[in-house]
Length: 252
Image (cartoon, rainbow, N blue to C red; front, side, top):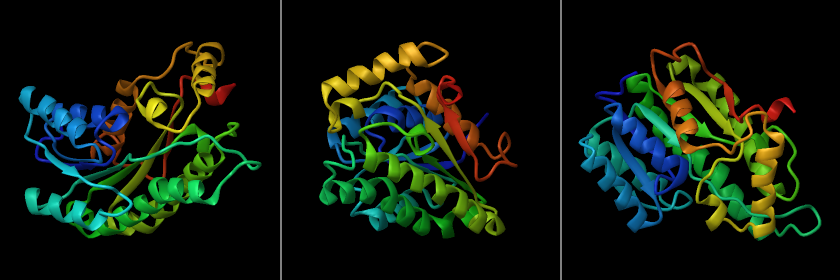
């Protein structure tokens, strides 16, 4: 699997799934445009890629809820084209129907869904030229009910529908659209999200007790799946796929 000569735009790339996907795809030869709000962490990811001898990345410090046009413009200005868009940026918070606040609901939907729609829309003309593809990072929370993350779960369910609908819309343009739907993955989202320590501990305990593979997911699991779906040869006949990366969680 090679991404030599390919340009990949990855949001939420300053840590976790996005950062590892950037490192992984760069190791396969891709020129990566990495986007994140935390400049220090984003630059650290870029430095890791450079020190490993991979193509020099473009680091864009930006907020996907506000800066989508700038993100696309800077990527095209730097690399001249776009082959793959990885919509990874996302946030999570603890809420339910009793205590939900619309301000929190809006914040999650603006980040997890609205930004994906707008960024995808802006990237379509560039992806059409390269017959590229989009990989959205969703969650098993969009497929299976999980308590006390109502807004997050709804945003991921809507993202899954967007993946399938846009796959149908963009097929005539030779643009594939797929998603990965991970279960719990060990990433900093647990530390930076508005989740209680009790909920975090319960999620980890559930991974050990309920997941058939008896472990929590690792970012290397998601990076391999993203690379597979993004590869024009390995996955050329796949579009509208919601690929669960869950250690068998959806089976139980």
